[in-house]
Structures are given as C-alpha cells and as structure tokens.
Length: 62
Image (cartoon, rainbow, N blue to C red; front, top):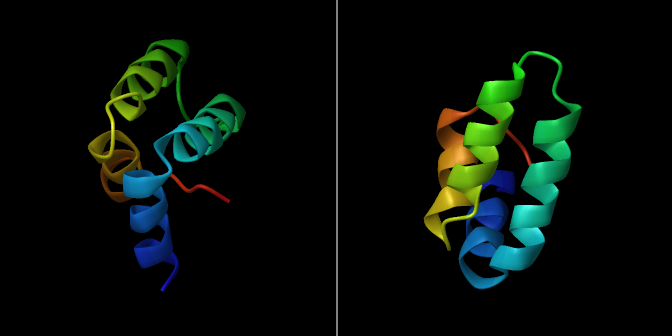
C-alpha cells in the first residue's frame, strides 16, 4: 500500500516527492557524495525519477 501511495505522489505531486527524496538522499549514510548527486539528478525527472529512486535505489519518502 505504501508503495502505491509513493508512486501516486511521485506522478501527481512531483515537487513534494522530489523534496522528500532529496531529504532522504542527503540523510543516507550508505551513499557516497557522487551517488547522492546522481540520485538527486535522477529524482528531478518528472514522475519517473522518484519512482526509480524508491524501486531501484532502496529509497523512501518517509
């Protein structure tokens, strides 16, 4: 259920999803600086970026 809510949030409210992703990316200790920058760039892509972060990057919105 949480994944469905995150996908809908990423599609319809991308600015909110992007900010939540950036907060999560910055606070992650398992990523180096280059990976953090790369994931921030990827999540900027409208709709699909945050979904990729959640599915492939082991990320979360909250």
